[in-house]
Length: 221
Image (tube, rainbow, N blue to C red):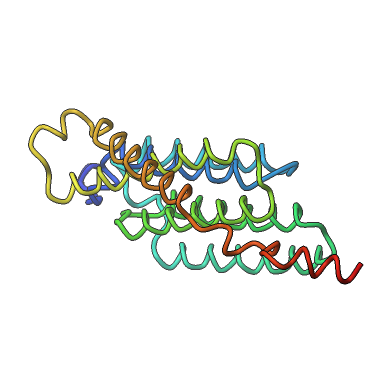
């Protein structure tokens, strides 16, 4: 009888650091997208248990994790529940709507955490989930800690795909260092570009109070 270690797993399923960074980024995104949701502690507990199971056993055991058909079925089930919840609470406020979407996206993230034989496509899916959560956060929730959470999640994403690149083709000396330095420099460079784009963006061209607008208001008065 072959030992449990004989089950083949993907490099991502064997690498601890790439999965820790990917899972942490999802948590930061979820915290930015929810407000006053009574299910948040339960969701975070469920996610923590799924991450512990993945980080502790995924590199050694392949069979207990969700296969592709099971993963698709669970995502479809979550979508049906999401539609039912939104339809039942259609008269709710924006906060209720944002919490419902965040629960659905977080459920999908948990399914991908427990999926079998992770690939780079799974990490891209988690990145899309994070982006969707921050879009919900910026549109409906707008928490005070939005920018710190966004920076933390973006840093985790940069490190995640840096590790994926190392796993795919390697780099001299970087595998031993872990890659946090390169990821931090890349993130700071991206933040600099974002800051310059924010300062130079012609926001005045999109304002409603253009020259002449005040005169029009005076004429109406």
